[in-house]
Length: 309
Image (cartoon, rainbow, N blue to C red; front, top):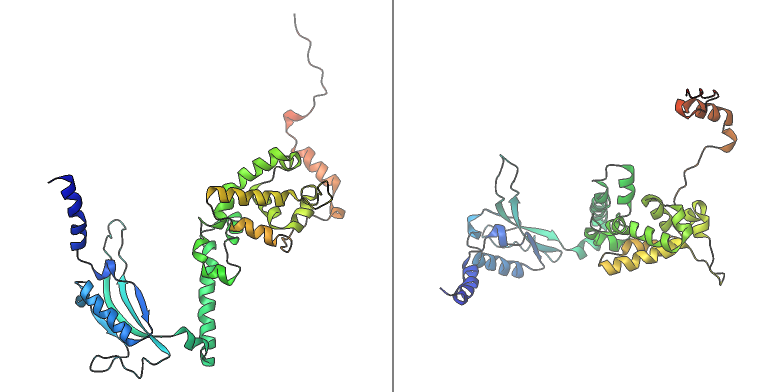
């Protein structure tokens, strides 16, 4: 058989492979009418050779096996789902995933929930539960205080971010900063001597980029400077814009830098209070430093013995 024959035979072989419920059927689909759901079920029977081999769980059906119009009203949609049991790849406990049943059930239409005053508390509870799951997701793998601080930036702050929370993962907006902060620090340090002398850590650089008030309090020479025209010229805003450019050039998500630039003049970061200067015991600190001084660092008052010739 020639290569051309093999190439021509391959698609046919793929098409002849039987489709199965486990591998090919959607996990869940919803329909606004029973007619649409019926057409989908008929298509599943035709497409999946093993469709009829699984038990069917039907909710809201008549004794004749039809959709009950008293259940599937204008406020309900039809949901068709496959109920599966996940397998395991753990050594010694290997087992494949399996399909337990095909489930058909009524599900409230979103518009019917929104317009029903009695459903508002239920809807609010569902939203609160889901919002909590989404908000906490970035924090679950954080093991240290610094990791929690990093993960905090991945938590959603708007409806749009809740709806697109999948991108706010370890490969999302925080990862962009984690990947680029050293390049930003190096480039800014080479261009601006004062920035380089500050030798900012990863955490401190991000804080100063995120909050203008924090930067002004801790690094005033870098934040509250002006250009020759007398206009504000923060080095940290330059760093943010450099981050945006780097992210774009690397094909990365620039959200974290976009957010910094948009919110840094409103965002407040708490500055840890140092010990009150009035309570600073200079004598006690001096005594401790003297006591901790290594023995070999003490200056000798003895004259070195004369060399013997």
